[in-house]
Length: 84
Image (cartoon, rainbow, N blue to C red; front, side, top):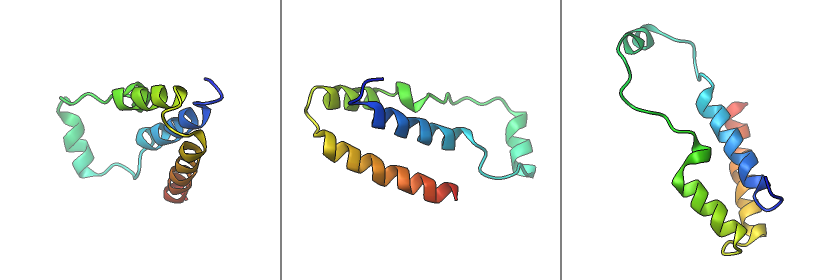
């Protein structure tokens, strides 16, 4: 994790923890859905091609670091609000 991409990596970890965390207790629909095998594959956000491209552009200076950090702060604040 480089100093340039550290805020991006931290943001992705926050988003991934929201995706991984259950949002509510299971109900009857969840039991039905769990009885059949899932056909979709969930991929970690960290490995998504769009994130790799963003990280590359940030590292190469195509995206201003101060602008990216401001965006990361806004998204992180929104995630915190959702988790509260």
